Length: 77
Image 1 (cartoon, rainbow, N blue to C red):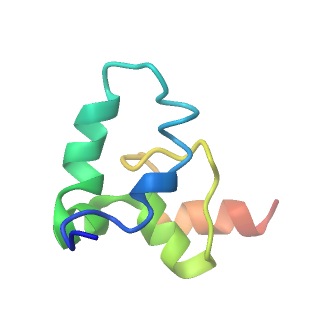
Image 2 (cartoon, helix red, strand yellow):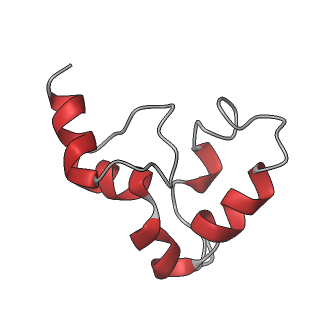
């Protein structure tokens, strides 16, 4: 796999769920999934999954919440 592409991109649930069929799908892929390490560092999904091993299916990469807030919410569920 190309190192510029996130290893989680192929199975990322936002593309089959919350973003399915929207005009934003390709934009999100370019900004986060296909932007190498810089994209992964901006992606809240990737950052949360790196800590917890998973993240909520409906979490967008550009969530206004901090990674710490998201992790705390997931752990309290």
